[in-house]
Amino acid sequence: MNQRVWTGEVGARLRCCICGDETVDADDYVLIQMTASPGDEAQWFGAHAAHLNSVLKEGFRVEIHEW
Ligand SMILES: [Zn+2]
Image 1 (cartoon, rainbow, N blue to C red):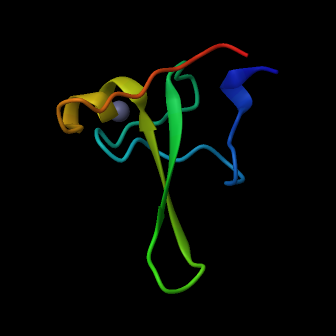
Image 2: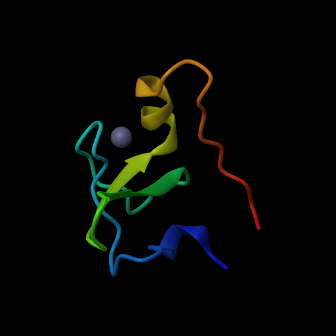
């Protein structure tokens, strides 16, 4: 499976919600789901893992693993 075309639950890659750049060629693209209870609605965010890590609380870290 080519990770460069992976889009998860969303039909296309989303721009990075941290830097705003395209993620089409990003090797560290991640898709983030936000939900609010009660209800089934979901909001999706795309991000570069490196940029996401730069804003995560200490002790939280996103890593990309090859399948
Ligand atoms: Zn970014």
